[in-house]
Length: 201
Image 1 (cartoon, helix red, strand yellow):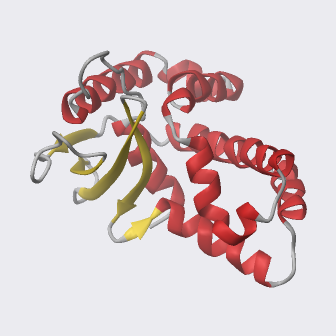
Image 2 (cartoon, one colour):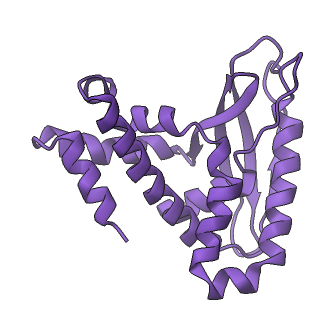
Image 3 (cartoon, helix red, strand yellow):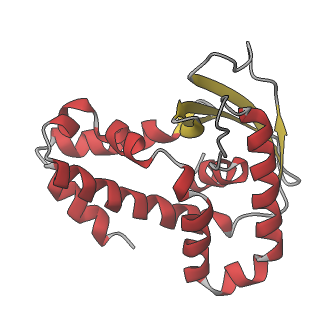
């Protein structure tokens, strides 16, 4: 499956979770709410999204980015060794460059939206008392079979944040991890990889 197909499914379920002060929020309720908001925004701005790519980037940055575990994802895709051996400034630079690449990929995937819907399945074992949960969904399409998508979420400061997803057995982080590990194994440094990410259009 193409990465864009994975990412459009990712966007449909969304990353935004609003915390409560006393208890961990229900990830299922919040995901459904945010998904509806995202679907409504995509429908409302479909024409604008197609003719104005910069607006797509702004939409992704405003709605999706604040609720993603960007630092955790950045650390995961390069591996513990490369991350720990890098300075704070190198880590921050890579995280920013990696985030920009993901945003552009999300923006491109938004154009592929054609009124898909998402079916949610109950969280196995519930979410109470847990700091990590996995939510199973299916993206229902009119032009093909449903796409199974599993979302992994972590509770951070009373907010549920998506840190990975799996579509038909293929993980988002796994895809990036394989790419960066190949480059690191060939002697590239995190700084060099960051420079290459910045050059991506």
